[in-house]
Length: 241
Image (cartoon, rainbow, N blue to C red; front, side):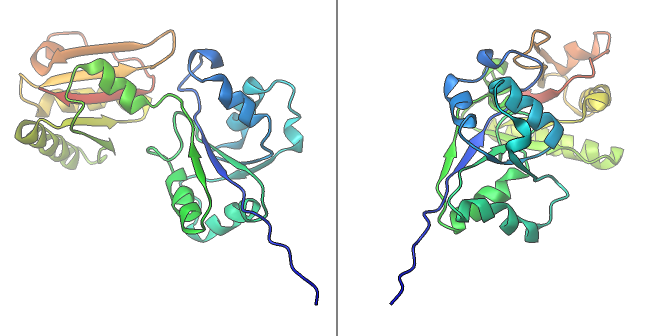
C-alpha cells in the first residue's frame, strides 16, 4: 500500500507598513525585515508600492523572484481561496497593506478570517496603526472608541452621520474617529464645524510618524476662529469631550 504524505499548512504573517515617507527603523522593529527576508509569497494591496516597501526592508532581495498576489477592494470573495493556495501548500505568506496594519480598515480582514476557517495559524506583527496613534495623542477617551472610516459623500447624509456621532459621544463618552481622502480633508472639517456643538473637541492628526506630523486638539468653536487650510495629507478626525 502506498502511503500519502501530509504537507503542513503554511503560516500567515500580517506585516505592518509605514504610514508615510519615513525611515523603516523609526516605525518598525527589526523582526519585520528578518521575516520578510524569508518569505517568498505575499498578498498585497498594491504591487508597485509593496515591491518598494519590501526593497526598503530587504535591499538585497531579488523582487522578481517573489510571488505577489493582489487583494484590494475589487477582489471577489470567491478569489480568496486562490490567495490561500500557497498556505495550503506549506508556504509562509505575508500580507502587506498600503499603510499601517493589515486587517484594520483594510481588505485583508476577509483573508485573515478565511485563514482561520482553514486552520491556518495567523501572526499579527507589531507596527504603526494610525487610529491608535491618533487616539493616544488626542487625550480623548481610550476606553471606549469607535472608528467609522469614511462618512457618506452626500452632504445631507454626511451631516446626519456627524450629528449621530456627536450624540453617541455625549451619551457614552465614546471617542468617534473618521477619515477621508486627503484632498477632501478641508471639506470634512467644514462639515464637522457646521454640524458639531461649539464645545465639542475635535482632534486632527495628520501625517502621523512622518516629519510633517501634526496633532492639534481644539473645540469646534476654536477651530471656527482659525483660518482653514488643511494640508492634503492622510489625516484622522476625532471627536471627544
